Length: 332
Ligand SMILES: NC(=O)c1ccc[n+]([C@@H]2O[C@H](COP(=O)([O-])OP(=O)(O)OC[C@H]3O[C@@H](n4cnc5c(N)ncnc54)[C@H](OP(=O)(O)O)[C@@H]3O)[C@@H](O)[C@H]2O)c1
Image (cartoon, rainbow, N blue to C red; front, top):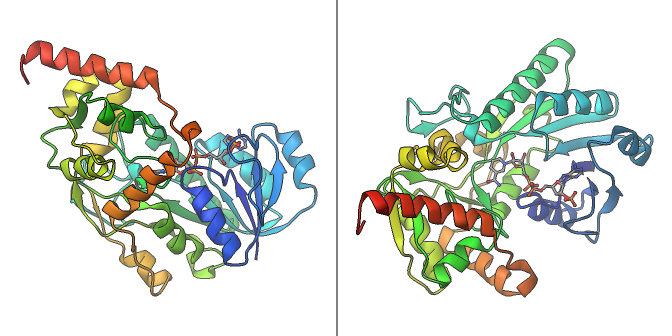
């Protein structure tokens, strides 16, 4: 199968690209080459997806069995992709987000039929608008879309509700004994999925005709509280976390940007029913326990000092929230 990933070297997609190559897919990666210059076994196409003329020149007259756009976020991105790919793809996979599911959820167990509605987070509303446009194109013109909604998926990053996704910031805060914010009382339920588990399910959907016009999430069946997630990350680094519990509303009042990702997503208990992906990809189930997966992530960071980037701006934001909270609740 000839497959194009737009993006393909990111937090989820780098692992999936490596797995696709190992499974014998003829893989093309279109990105700017700034994260990973070349992934051995793939065909590298260097272009900025927002520079349409460059993209057309790079793609020439290539046709694909499958195109996955890992970095489409708005309906404009979808219109661009449809115009670009309509006549040269048998399956187009849109990477949406499980944050698009109804917030707050009317039922704790999420299936693919859970309504899509998120009044709290623009990112999720944009993903919903993309899905709607694509399903309209599927109905009106047979555009061969498959929608995949990842939930929090990690590999070379540390899954945390606020504060340093994608950087070493959380680990640095743990190591220096700085407070780690856990929203609420830390007992709400959440699911984190290793990129390799996601990837095995995901690759089973590529070239799968039954998946056209369908939407899927692909998550672990291991359900954890946020306290457990935080303590497990700390334990993987050989440390204990200085957890400060702060209500999500308080975080949102002090810092609306940090708050949107809590109120619009992670403050709500969410558990996923993975029956659909198991039906479409027989034999698939998530296999990497969180304690093992996050230990691998820490090991990855430890493998090269260049990976230990700290997001100082974000860390300062977290300190401001903690200071504001402790000013109101001395000794909290
Ligand atoms: N991880 C999660 O927990 C999670 C949860 C829900 C949804 N998602 C969705 O998953 C997707 C992210 O997947 P990911 O892990 O691959 O993403 P990522 O970590 O954001 O990586 C972005 C990828 O796109 C490339 N890229 C960025 N800007 C580009 C541009 N202008 N032109 C061409 N290439 C560009 C990057 O390479 P260069 O920088 O070298 O160009 C890289 O390959 C998003 O759609 C997100 O909404 C993720």
